[in-house]
Amino acid sequence: MTHPLTLDQAALLSEYQLWPHGYVAVATLRASRRALEVLAVPHSFDALVAATGANAGHLQVALRTLRVLGWVTVSDAGAYAAPAATVAAASCASLASVCDAVYSDAPGMVARLAGQLRLADEGWVGFAADGAAPAALRTMLTGAVLAPLLMELHMHHMETAPGGGVRLRGLDRAALGPLAASFRRRGMCVAGLSDGGLQLTESGRFVVQRCGAFGVALSYRPMLRELETVLFGDVTEVFTHDSAGHEAHVDRTMNVIGSGFMHGKFFDDMMSVHVHRTFDELPLDQQPSIVADTGCGDGTLLLRLYRYVRERTRRGKQLETRPLLMVGVDFNEESLVATAKTLREAGVPFETMFGDIGDPEPIHEGLCSRFGARGKDDILHVRSFLDHDRPYLEPTDGGISASAIEGESDAAYVRPDGGVLTRALTYRSLVEHVSVGPRTQGMRSPSRARAVIPAAPSPSVRCEAVPLSLPVPLFADAALGVCGGPSRPAASGGALVDGVGHGAVHGRGDVAAL
Ligand SMILES: C[S@@+](CC[C@H](N)C(=O)[O-])C[C@H]1O[C@@H](n2cnc3c(N)ncnc32)[C@H](O)[C@@H]1O
Image 1: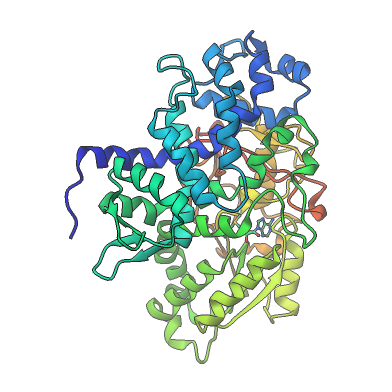
Image 2 (image 1 turned 180 degrees about the vertical axis):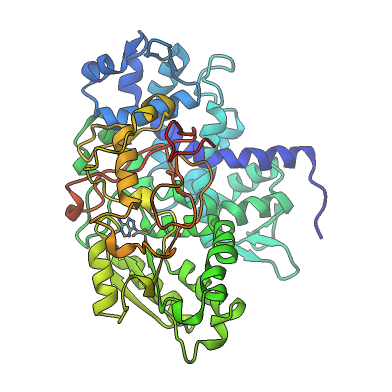
């Protein structure tokens, strides 16, 4: 039975949304200190880059994050400045030690972070006194600690209690005391249990169960730990691959878990509108025999789509005679393995295949030659939250005018070498990417809608009514205030397009005001 929330619980639940922001903001503050010290005196962006030797593109992203938080200001004339409180916080020893604890990948995470929680409960006294500290700094610091701590508890220590409710188990002694004290203070747990576990309250249970959504921010821990190198050093040291070929700057498994957690609502709309139209309303002989999801993650979307077709559409009653093959496409071997596991265990007919969304023709060829697709109209391409992540290719179509975007968006994008990628170029590249053109012929059907991409919230760039065969508006957005570099060596001709933007972009007929 649920009880009405107390005022404190309501405050807790509204604050918890900020915790993953803290995880990114705190690393950004610490890594930016070289630039912040210079900004004790106002500087233009170019002068700041010259004074610090920063990688301009990444610095632009960091400044945007700091500016949104009010930790840096920018004048109408474009001069950046850092208040004394920001400079002091960025350079203080307390911040260095929080960062050491939070972004470390050493074992013993729960005990290490529970120790930091005590500092949070004491009001982060190592930082400037209230009034002098940058706004929301304490909330961000607490979030930087709580976000990874809750995720760790969620993944390894959470269980349903025999008598109902949720409890934490298997906590070591060093962690239990500070954790129980701090969680009790926040109304998240009741007294410790005799077997060393912790029984969560309603709000404790809510935040521990829901923190899966923090996974996207948390997955960038390897990059956040090296953010100073990203800003001022050799970016290729961070945006590289390990010996097994996995991206080194992101924990992709955690990323997929986190994004999967957030996507349910978007997938609902995708099913009830577009998938329904394709498999229930189109004549059977015009329906595709293959569904391909590029950037398939762990196969959740393909599974959901197959179940929807089977249970909710006319095609579902004909699967014996008109089978549907679900194909997971990804450039990451781990994701292909995860997709195969998801679909195999669910009894869904599937195949997996390597493919990079930045190079779509081989995907189309593979679907035809390996899995028997009979051309473009025989394939339904679905993608979720991928196109912002494509390797950047220089636009070639001079007819796409994007000059208005420069003034109207404050999104920040980065070239693979760490330099600035302008908003106009990013926009033009996106329009080419989703337009019918030589690079993407095989992924499109000029005659019928065959690509379905669910809409995401807080779009940075929204393209509508571009000459696409897309049945829905397409959104490009980024999860974090920090940009990536090249996604893998094969993509070294371009950058990972990954910006932040919550402002609307308009000014052209094909871009809608939000
Ligand atoms: C960016 S997300 C896409 C999220 C996923 N479709 C979902 O809805 O959960 C992560 C997945 O996309 C894959 N990916 C990222 N960039 C890609 C690219 N350029 N081409 C193909 N797959 C990519 C990653 O390997 C990972 O499996």
